[in-house]
Length: 93
Ligand SMILES: [Zn+2]
Image (cartoon, rainbow, N blue to C red; front, side, top):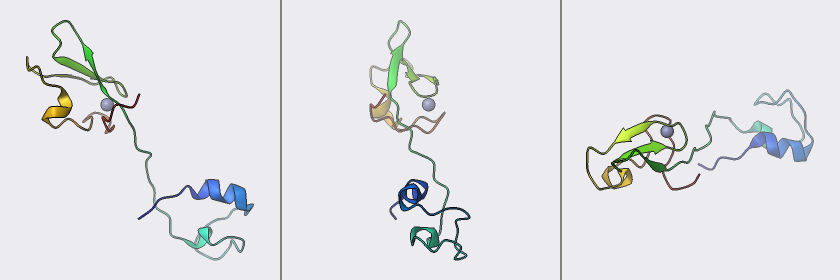
């Protein structure tokens, strides 16, 4: 499945509400497509906090986690996603 921003498309196409699958919009085929709700993917990274160096904070929601003295980074032990906000920890701000 590929997701597009239909609202953005309709701005270009010039069609107007009501949108939907009932044939109201005669201008564009996009309005005849079924819609789903999708949340934009959030991105973040683990930022080192504290003095010991084994505590990290999500740059997106500020959730703090402790690596319990391990020298490894959270990503290395399966924290690729923040369990607080669901952000993908791929290094983006
Ligand atoms: Zn988070």
